Image (cartoon, rainbow, N blue to C red; front, top):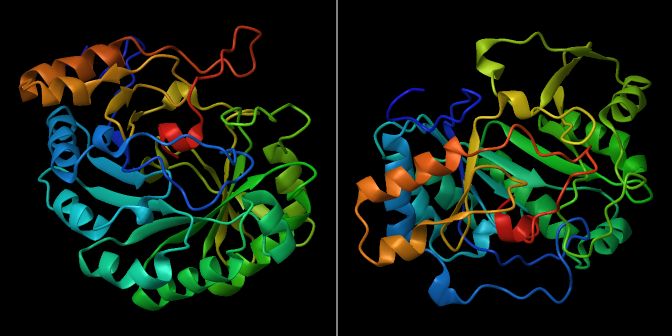
Length: 332
């Protein structure tokens, strides 16, 4: 085991930290949230100074990539200030943001000005009616406006994340791919995972990667991108269009788990450290931090958490236990 790093018993090294800055979201997507969500009291949410301190501890243990998530991170006031501080932390090679895009039209320029260059925007359909059905809100126009503004600012790459749900959006796949190709966005399809608040997930609800690839290839022939060191630890399997106009990724957590190569850890908005998206326990860093724990103590807590990481998430096993918290509470 490497000393001073976040290493588990299977010799996987965590170098990628996903930090949730809020559990609040201005959408209520059916695959993630419920209409009657109970949000964490503001006093229990990490301050920007606390987030920065915990990220610095993680970086001292080998983390070099940070993704800011939520909830919806753009509802957190002053987010560009936090991102500016994170980008400047010595040792961090990459900072990115996942957003639903509603706030991008107003905030994209400020985010770009502080140095952010990579964003992922969640968009499951281009149909106004289906968007409202899935998100339970009328906001498609704002998302599309946000994407346009991000492109104008110069963000690159801009990735679109879509969760393919049978009976909802599998027929939207080709439309989304066409939209992404026309606008030089990179399309990514994510299999529906059992992390929704309403417990609607079932094997009849998610659309496997193979079906999506076959559907897209009928109109836009695809070929796998050869693996490289740059793609190491990527959750997505990458394909490129044979005509050279872009590529598409598939995150297949259910049909093709990638646990053996996982390098990710998570920090929830209320300061809980998670060694796996599907972990059933978490380590409370924020409480200890507020009690005055030193960086050395916090680092030890992170190291111990990762050391106890399971081999995989067990979604395809009868032993699978769904986490108590849904995706928006864990951090997307």
